[in-house]
Image (tube, rainbow, N blue to C red):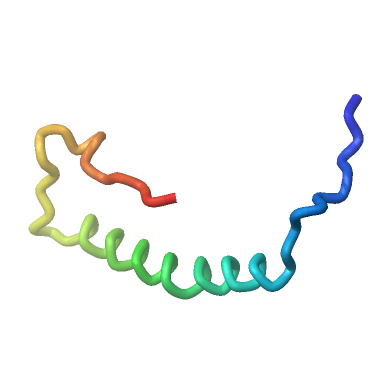
Length: 56
């Protein structure tokens, strides 16, 4: 069994910035994308499984 250890590279300020970015920018982008998918006029392309690239 491995016991977790403290990450010496953890940056609390950076972690907070990333959290706020995900909560605002990323969430707004995903909501806009999902709204598009729910549109009655939405028609997926033939390779719709591979049509959305992530930017992680």
